[in-house]
Image (cartoon, rainbow, N blue to C red; front, side, top):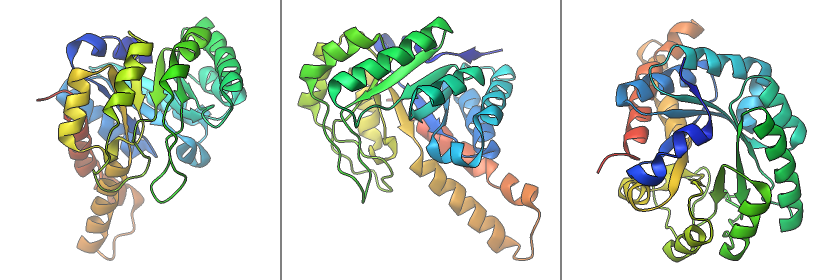
Length: 277
């Protein structure tokens, strides 16, 4: 069994010049393809269940699903709750077998974000579970604008919450379909100086050009990069190709099965982009 916590897989990244991919799961086929990709690359993987996934499949199904894949995997697999909205959601994820939870209090005033995050950290750590939190706000392509993380708040946030990883906003954006994000290197350097030894996280990794991903993994304490949009694009292309190849096809298992190979290829590229020069 290679079930792991977030701290297990991110701590080595602080010194080995790599980062771990947090891959956004929307269904069984995704999770299988991502686990196979991680095994092929010989790298850990973080299987993530965000709000969209949870609206479609309950945590009571997702937790055992992730754990089943981890039990058969040859590499460490983290079962991660992404963008947990509140204490109840994070507690439910822990009860359902997740090994890591992200609490997203980024829209709250600093003191309230700290207080709520600290409450979740206490609950999670008592169960041996890692916690990721967010400071600053990562916006959405063609949606809400990002608000950069204030380096002056980072040291207090880390000290008063006891988090295992911190998601930051330094130019990254969710749901980008083109790799054209620009990173604020000065802000990142100031954040790193404020919290040395704390693994940092970037959401919206699909917007990062490959050379930038490699540089950030190699030269900074960014230890986790979330990647979803480019994988969903690969899924959509594979499914359309399967339907076009056989317009009369109707069997769900055959159609979705046709996405596994292309999804594994896309996931391997995403994982490799964080650990190869």
